[in-house]
Length: 178
Image (cartoon, rainbow, N blue to C red; front, top):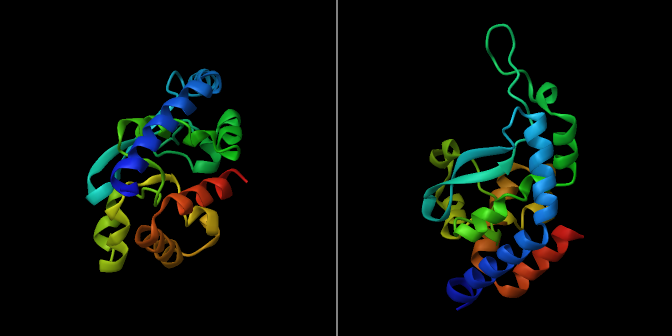
């Protein structure tokens, strides 16, 4: 009952409340990034969700689109705007994903959505991560995030999928804000 009724309801209610509560910050960051990125404050990208269904993830755009003489994008470090650096450091770039939660594409807690080109690389065990909606935060994020290997992340994601519960989600949320 938690996975099918309570969690989706809590996700929607909490996302709506969080968007309302954080709307001044959301607006301020949107305006600052629009100014830094020629009027484009958002970055939208295709990501696989539950059952591998592709959805459009929304994030704040923290890098500009500057290119070299050949028309290639400059390295990420050179494109990161000063305001974008702050937004990333404070994880505010994830704030627009509340809209994805409200829409029903994502959950607060679940495996982070990766790029679609990784789908064919998953083994049978790793595909289990798509049995649930992707999350803004997840078990792998609170257990090492970028300091752990690809295999460890997938193992932690699958561990979460197999043990998903209200108390585990609450623990992950508390560890995320800690």
